[in-house]
Length: 138
Image 1 (cartoon, rainbow, N blue to C red):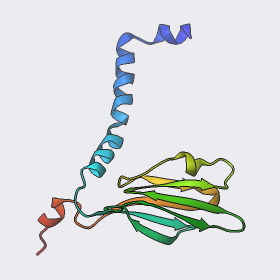
Image 2: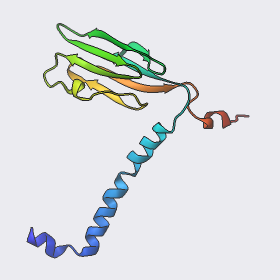
Image 3: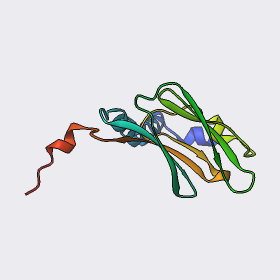
């Protein structure tokens, strides 16, 4: 450790910190573009093994709804939709990763249960930005 500190100068630490901060710019831009989408509706697309099983419109959804998605053999996922958010409430996978991901309600967020090949994607549909209206083709 002392050898590393002898080689590094104070300006080197500033450059390293700056490069680390710059590496987070794409993540920030992507997150801001997803939250800037307004209008339209938010839909949870549930797919298993690449095949869409169910689509649930989260925009305007009221109340609590639970349903089971069966997989191969004895696999199951208990899904819960509460108002305008969705989660995997219970499943029988060994690590419970999908359950631990919690509630999702924003476009671009996902829930994944890899042992059951289950994917829940939150998408924005419809008129999501004013830029779409400004495209002119000749």
